[in-house]
Length: 491
Image 1 (cartoon, rainbow, N blue to C red):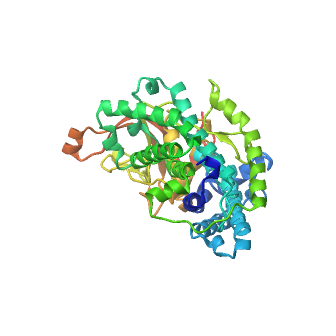
Image 2: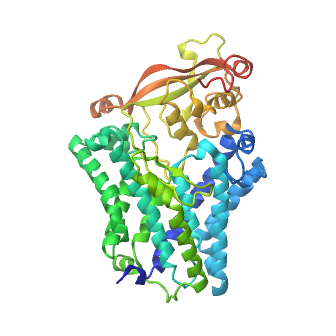
Image 3: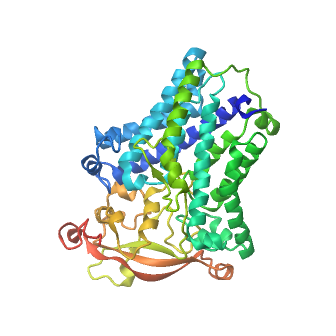
C-alpha cells in the first residue's frame, strides 16, 4: 500500500500519549527547578532576561509577567494540560468538539513551554528543548476523535526524526577522529554528562564490542534515516532500528528525554497495519481527516518546507553547527549530539566549612543529585527526568576556572553560603542543615571508573584525583563586596 493511503489512527494514539508524558515531565521539571535557576531570585534572575532580550527575539509570557507566581501558574497549568492529553481528556468530548479541544490543549502546552525555553537561557539551552517544541507544534495538527490524522503531519514528524538522527550522524563523522577510528565508546560511558547505573558495566565491555557499537551508530544515524520515507515494511524497519538504538542509550546513560522523545517520533514510521500485525489492538471505525484540518496541515507543511532551508543548509555544511534554532518559535531546527568526545572526566566538588581556621578535615562536601561526588556510590538513574543544574556542572568542570557561560556560578555559591532553600532543593544533601557555612570552596577532580578488580576489592565505582582549585575559599562577605564577587569569578 502506498504510504499516503495507510491508516494512522493507532499511530496518532501512541504519539500523542508518548508526547503528553514527555510534556508532563518537562512541566514538572519547570515547576521544581525553574524558580531557583531562572526565577525572580534565581541563579540567572528573570529580570536579566527581560532586560537583555526583546519579546520578538525570545517570546515568553514571563517577558510581561516576570515573577515566580506566574512561573508556578504556568508550570502547574502545563502539568494539568499534559495529564489531560495523557488521559485522553479532550477526546472524550462529543465529536464536533473533540478536534478544537485537542488543538487548544496542544497549542497551550506548546505556548507555555515556549515561555520556559526562551526565558530559561543557558539552563534550557539543550537540543531536546527545541525538539520538544518542534514536535509539540506538529502535534497541534494531528487531530482527534474518530477521524484519521492528516498524513502530511505524520510525514512532517518523520522529517523531524530524520533531521534529529541524520544531523547527529553527520556531526560525528565530521567531528572527533575517534568516530572515524571507531574508538569513541572507549571513553563515552565514563565521560558522558551523567552516567547511570549501567554505565560502569557498559564502559567495561570488550574493546571489540565498542568498535561494533560505533559502526552500528553510524549505520543507524547515517543510513537508516532514509528508510523512514520508504514504503512499509521498510519504514517500520527503520523506525524499529531507531527505537532499539535509543533504548540502548536510555539504559546506559541519563540524557533527559532526548531518547524518549526520539522514540515517540519514530512511531511515525509505523502504520496502523504494522502495529496491528505485532500488537493485538484494533482501531475504531474511522473517517478521513476533516477537510479544514487537512487544508491547515498543508499550510503547515508549506511553512515547514520554507523554514527547512537554513537547517538543511547547516546540516549539509562542512561547518555544521548542532542543536541550533533558526527562528524564535523553534519551529524547524537543526540537531546533533556528541560531535566530540572528552577523554577524561572532570568533576567539581563543592565544600563548605564553619571552622575559623579550617584544616583539611573541616571541609564538608555537598552532594549533587546526578553528578558523582562520593566514589562509593553507583551512578543513579534520572532520565527521562532532567537535572538542569547537574548538566551545567558537567559543562563547567571542563575548564579549570569559571568562564563566561558560568556567570551563574557566583550566585550559586552565594546561595549556598546563605543556605538558600531554593538552591539547596536542587542538591542531594546539605551538610549544613542548621547554619550556613562560613566559607566555601570548589575543588576540581579527575574521575575515572574503577576497574572490575578495584571495585571487587574496594566496593568503589569511581577513583578520583585532585587536579586543581576551581574557586578558592571564599566567604559570603567576600563574594558580595570583595575581589571575588558574583560576576568577577568569571575570568
